[in-house]
Image 1 (cartoon, rainbow, N blue to C red):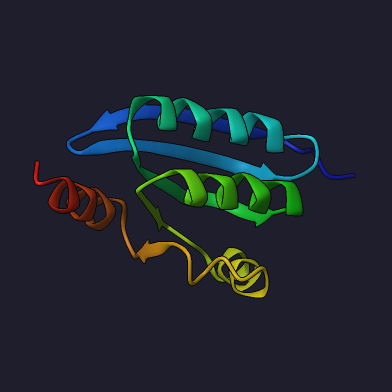
Image 2 (tube, rainbow, N blue to C red):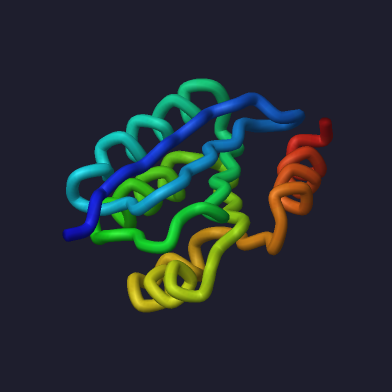
Length: 116
């Protein structure tokens, strides 16, 4: 039996906010993920999502990402593993977000976009 656990954190970075997720974003945990994304959006229109510690994203997690992409000026994902990247591609989200390989590259990108 799988344990569905997810830890999230939201922090300000120059030019935006970063949401860090660790665990699995599934039916049980998607609401926590969506709330973290909403908290970041309340702070800024430029959001970075660090998915380094995520190995699975369900449909509800994809909906939360799509809603953030629709409402944010900038949505940058980083630390995207192969399984999550494949899920994003199948869902058609890969074209709607920017993906950076590392957390630092994503922070640098959002800083540049914001002119910070």
